[in-house]
Length: 220
Length: 295
Image (tube, rainbow over all chains, first blue to last red; front, top):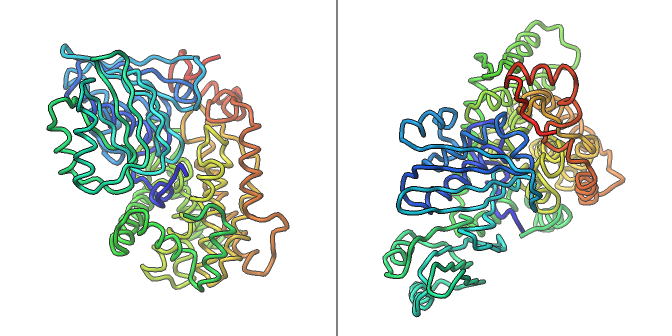
């Protein structure tokens, strides 16, 4: 079941004109911005499929940039997001691609500053609901069956045990879990689907672990 | 979680509760939240819908100037007393148009189920509420009933124009509104399903061909027709008319048609109304020579 809540259907409250192309894009941007964790110098955005064909008319460009700056779907500053980004010193580059993607509404967002690069691929499946399919080159396969914790960390011994230990201590059950890495000892990713609501305290506790780079929650 | 309309209707009928209640209970369970919280969230969505209509009736124009002020024109026309279709239907039309005009102007709306189709559910609700003597609770229930049907469509077919054409957006919204009107009017869960089936059947095949890739033409007027269609479908179901094709099969048919539909007619602005000479001229006027489309 891709949609779990009635508020995915009656909602979101948003700035028009398109839930998939504006609200969904804002949410993809929000997720990218949250995971990058700071104001980027460069936001390089690639649109595929219907996004590539209609992004200007649907406000996909302003929405995704607004999202990167932390604007939610209903933020009335979204129409002015490109100007605001300029004021904040963010260079924005848009690119369209003919490459075939699994979903017609696909966007790739790369955020950069002198300290690093971060990239996600998001799809907007309709009505403002999104899925993240790739994160820093790691393919993500979340069932959408519940909230998921995504943790970018250093590939060191004990990192996975430390995170799952915290979940266990808070009596949070893991429904599904994937771990992946590009190279031994480099960056790695944990995607953990949990059965219950995850409080901000638990999230903060995981964030404080020494091996952890970044943590985010999907599907809540 | 219910997966089909059949299951939704059976649950409501067996337990003797309205469809809105089935949806509320499921949401409380999914969120691990309280009934008050869930109902309160929906009340806030209702307030957003009311604000959008109020704004539209003061007159709103989109940035491109392609749409706007038609809700005002329709409201004035209703007041003139010369209308043919009947005040209630045209009131729904005016408010559906109005909501979508605010959407086109990048104003704040509540997606129902999408932004492009955001006019149909609130437009019909605000039109029937006085006639059906609906209090605040009944208005919130209307949104839960709409949501329950949209939930089945979203999980079994699609509510995205890019994936399924306009039938997935305004078509779904029309069915959702029809089902909710029936419940508000005191019809049975079965009659809600019938109204949904009749409404969606009449939207099958509807392509998504937005002029210049904007959510304006023909989206705004399609919301108007969705509103009118929903009220007629609801009246048909309440009259005892049934649908030969069951609701879930209509949803499957919609999904199948969406899969077969060429990409040019699914929110890419490559075909249909978007590819008419006038549409291409409007597009050049708005975006300059660099058209908002890849050949």
